[in-house]
Image (tube, rainbow, N blue to C red; front, side, top):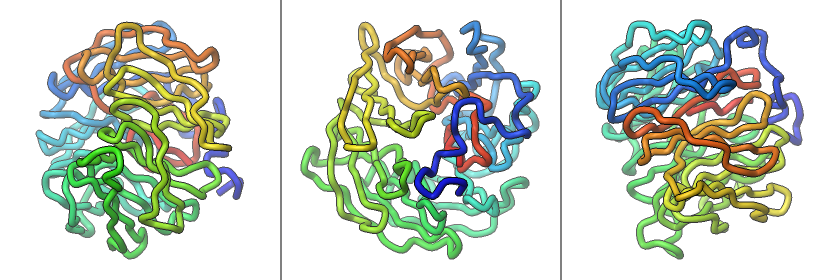
Length: 338
């Protein structure tokens, strides 16, 4: 960690690694039902190309070494590499049920969240050869984030309303916890993100309509912040001061201030929408997020706190990645960098 008080200190605006500094900035949108990926130039807001991938692309994930983007084709049981220099896909690799993809902080393993298989599969980060399969005692294995020191991580299980505590080195589940039924009889945890100071995990809950807070070293003890209907994705701004939370059920983005856990703004999509997963531009001025059930991508102006526009893409766009982004290495998903 380059700053012990800020996990995201390497993610400042335009602080690009030498590995990615010459990559053209693009937005990669996996169209889940269209079985394709759409590429957009964020400077012109124009679609550059759309190419086919195996069935059911869910997320576009930057590799730990920042050199490759992986399309998670979970229904088609493949990972498709994209060369970020050219924007073109390579040969797909057979990987069973790759719903989501993460990388350990030391780069030793890729972790495939095999949702339907109910397995967390540790793999070689380059060849994707299996190293260890870990059966999970929950349904809907999904999103994750790591502790400040990288020794453990927290994973959400959306269909059973649980979270898991996992030892990174031992590749072992240490504890499980059920989310409180305070605001919904069936909590549905989604994205997980740790606070910049490493003290607190935030867990979006689509059915409870907000985020749960959990101290990093008090697993299973929860607080709650209501954000909006269908709270789904959580993104840390480039100054590490705020979290942007996509409320998929009401077509809005809530802005949460980390210093006091207060909601300071809500950006609404005109006419409503379904903001799902996305990322923040390298310069920190824009937030791009998929419109899951509207077949569009939304763009928000972070500087002025407002909706900018929507861009037509394929059917059911999901975990889009804007790339490149600042950071020394990637922990996966649509771009979690350290």
